[in-house]
Image (cartoon, rainbow, N blue to C red; front, side):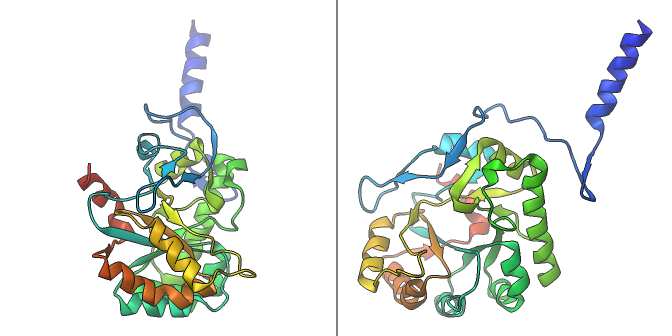
Length: 272
């Protein structure tokens, strides 16, 4: 009898132990929420059926939201959320920031760790001008292959780089590299306090060796625009740097305002 009790106590103690790895202390992986899906790997995808309307995603709001993950905002308000992904700097970010400043448009920049370390002045400017710098992992790996510890290390190293540059804690917004994630990834990010921000609108702008012409870009963006859209753009795009001022003007003429990603969840919930 005493032996059984000793085993029960030992199991209870082990369940409370912290996991220590690479000099970091992390709490054990918490249980999944009641609404959790079976573990699966997802490469984020959208099907555009009709121009100017929200596309059909491969995971619904009902599947994403319990993990604090979103791909659009309030679809009853003429608000657009502008987000940029960046793995490196090639000189296009400054004119993009100039255009955003001219229109008083807040944006979110999802950055990897080396970008933050190598471009401190740009990162400080983003923050000073009211933009949000989000976590895009440290070195843009396939996060679906990562263990819990490695996944958290990717986020923690990027957050540490941000704090070293800015002196402030990194805002808790995460975008999976290449839109690849597992449902466990969403859970881990949520339990670490992150909102996972996917996207509902994008166009082919990432190939720096084959940039779209202005007419193509304007047409694609127009067709992807709808109330509550989260736009994914790349700040390495020369086309984006050249058209953004005019594109922001177009959106303003259509009655759109530019939402702050920090208000995304609140804005989303007011539309339910």
